[in-house]
Length: 162
Image (cartoon, rainbow, N blue to C red; front, side, top):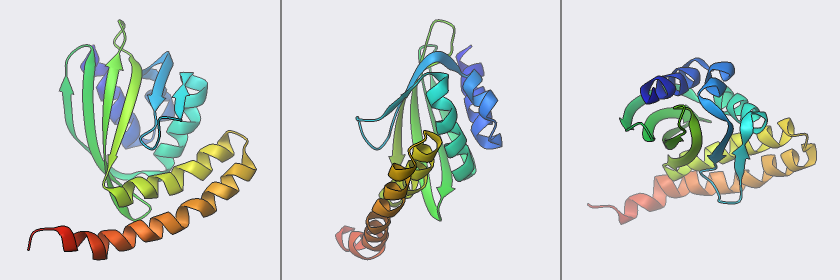
């Protein structure tokens, strides 16, 4: 049952099929943001806009890991978002029916995480009827994204091995 659920989860993201994605989640599932402990999405009504936004922004999705048991699975994929490479690991806690009850997301590298924040934040706010917040978020992440991209190219290599 658990591999059927993760197969639906994977296939939904690869094909951008929101209904298929929702079918992998329990009705009261919780998704924990990779950005902060302050944001979580609970239930299909909150998950739908999240999946719509994720599926609209992520490109070239390629899953490379699906491991675990009937209670906990970890799936990992690479993708592109806003010109940045991103790798996301999702820890999936399954309920007694084998549906996803809880997801905790982890994203790397930092430029990909900030590009995700830059793309997702305004879109999710808009879909939740928070147009003013969407405008603020659309502007707020830009300096951070520029700083992180510059640091990744110029500063980070200075700390690496010769």
